[in-house]
Image 1 (cartoon, helix red, strand yellow):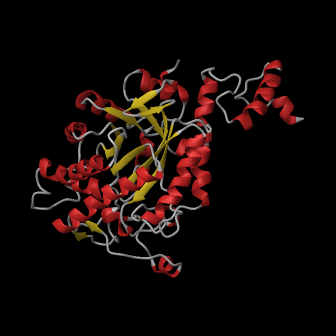
Image 2 (tube, one colour; image 1 turned 180 degrees about the vertical axis):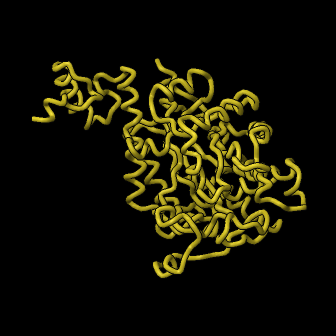
Image 3 (cartoon, one colour; image 1 turned 90 degrees about the vertical axis):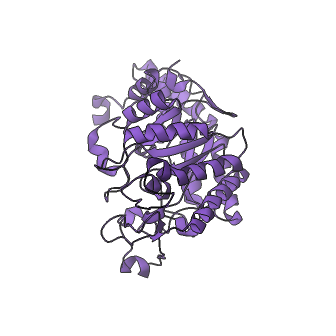
Length: 390
């Protein structure tokens, strides 16, 4: 059995395989509420065979949204929409995860597909709301972005409680796993990096001080959820900017997360560049972030998730089989092929009878597969060139 399709257990949750659909912002919520789009969007990944499907970064406060299109769980009225998504995901055999987040100094910006920059007059004319972002220090994300208001200790206390309250609502919605977003330049990661945090109080300066607020949030969320519920954290393992956060910092931070009851560190990178979260690093090649997951796993003694242009079943299997990570997280590849997990199983010869596919699909595909095999054709290949030409 390939490692990719071996079960993984975190506390009281068993994943049927080690394939995870990464949280990906769709910027399509309406006033913080999910829509029918989200039901179809997340349901198809579960139908496609992934072991764990993450709902995109979900805001813990209204002003913590990155864009006007972000979903939220800052009030009880948002639970029911999330509960419906959970039910759809679980009905197809996947575990349901949710990533909770505060956008920090990157809040109040354009939806990604409208520019991913500061809001413009045209955006306001289209009905978008603008608000004052907050952060550890009054340091703008980039030229043209608003300067965030520095958070007071009272403000920090309110956001810390908002994370805990959102986690409690996620439990009520039925999610299996919660991931705290501490990557990509959003609020919690901006406390960690000296690129955004120039405070002189106990929340700035030394590494210990810069870790303080993210660790306080972790402690509050862990206390707010059942002991049987796994808690993941996504980090930016490095900033990719001189003078910023480095992998050695991530190892130290991950050890502290483990001590507080975090079960897995999801190792992404970047986010403090104007180009976005990780888009600027696509040219680095397949698996460019895997070494960070491997190092954190080895040196911090905690399970990790590997991300970053993991596209083929063989490469995903090698990441796990070589002990570089415990789970593989796929994002854009899943958008391109929501049935990637089922196709990977076909690739490894695990589902010749399509038993793991949705029953409504499986019986059709089994007949089709038998017919193709009788012609000497592979299920994963297209028609012969001569046949296509006819």
